[in-house]
Image 1 (cartoon, one colour):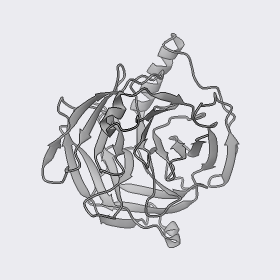
Image 2 (cartoon, rainbow, N blue to C red):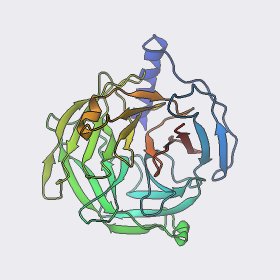
Image 3 (tube, rainbow, N blue to C red):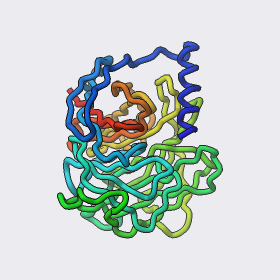
Image 4 (tube, rainbow, N blue to C red):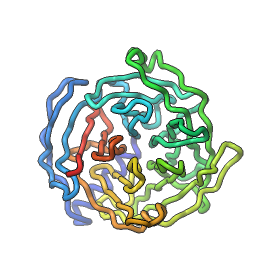
Length: 323
């Protein structure tokens, strides 16, 4: 999207002027056909907690041109969900760790104005898994309200792999959770859902300064517009500043991963602290290799690795594993 390239040009200019030193070195591109599993280790600065970034696949489905959100499936372990940025319809795409297509679903009752992130978490019915899709993009900061769609996560079967954007499967009806900020409109690309409480968190995207963190309580429903609560802000140390483009909460609820266009950051919750205190903790930068324009990150279901994608074709699936 045009706005993303404008952000990139400004951030690169700041970097050339000495805003901060470049953290990532150029990686070697793999020449691989779409959908074939690969293991390409990238010669980037190693992380103290995680190993080197590794491109483990390219996504087979070329309809995924602007992967803007990513989450691990709870109904079908080992599979993942993603969606495109604005300009696509209300579609979610399933794939496995080798990048193979596992199906396309149209989200019933949803529209796609500016989808920016996806998360998995609990919902109204106990022992049932839900997907949360954030229609939260607002480049012009003019939206009086934003929407998070909550839909029961489909159970993915081998036969679903034959579905496509042209002939998608259909989800159950989605609920529309309508939200507004307490301090006026904001652009945002990061949606997080707590794996135990179902609380919704949104981290806004800002060119300069620290991005704010907002919460919708677990009681957030579909009866009218709810006002988010501002919890504070996170101090992002990267050279893209507060331009956070994706995030996720670990399955155990003890860690948060955020990313910008190039790298990731992790926050760890101190022992015996309530989850809300995590936003006051320092962020540890994590190298993600060479991402053309990264906007999506998630934890592997076992919590022992982070996975990320990048916009553009071929769409790489990048993994960093905990040491």
